[in-house]
Length: 324
Image (cartoon, rainbow, N blue to C red; front, side):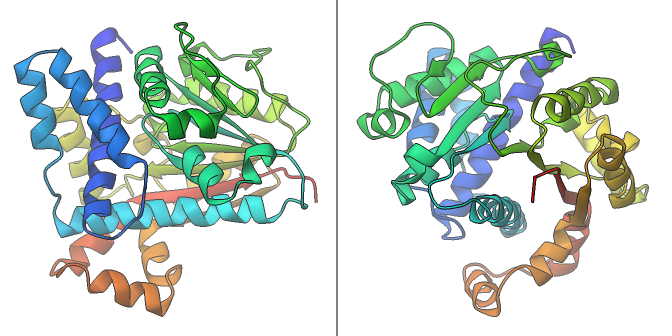
């Protein structure tokens, strides 16, 4: 990637944040911290000039019901799998979570806020471009609740943040190779790696190198990955073309176009348990009847077939080497 492409990839965090914000506003999701990050995003844009400020204001307008529903299903799937990982640990056991391309994600704060014992039992790492990390660090340090949750004592002007329970790393994933040591990480802990639309932006060889680093450095680990699929059909091709029109390239869509190819990808990397499913299945089978009824009542959706077609072109993968 060149600098222009890097900026395009970085801008996708704004897309994800604005989509989640819309879903929260409509009642699909709950997130007590998202307003802080929306305000931080708007403040950063205002500092870049009136044009950027207007663009961000437009970005945070309410989304279509189709987008809100898709955003809800995405977050529900990751929530379920993170909860599954945490439920497997013994009482008092310390575990580690490493989020690749974390952006404006608020998951660590929600985990520590919902259960105070998590503050001693979850060591959380977030990795992203330095510019994204600096913005997140500033948002954390400007809010007393976030500072307390991460255990920050003082404002360190260096890139990133490092406390006993939280590490915010300004690292380009393309620089990670054999022998790389993630500062503050503990390879002896059961480790969950989260990649939500992150590895998909890397060239296949670069993503393979990151996965190899994970399997060699964290031998007792699980990867939860959310990515788009081309499906090798017309809809997938239109997705690729639409993304390309915005300057966005997702190499994994052509390299790993199907669930089967994603499963083989992680089996080849040495994972012993690999499961994958498309998001339309999660929409129809992972939600309780009560939750289905709740979200149906939030907004009228007359594009069910279009929604399921869109969801069919995204997947979630669970690949694990966790010691039983």
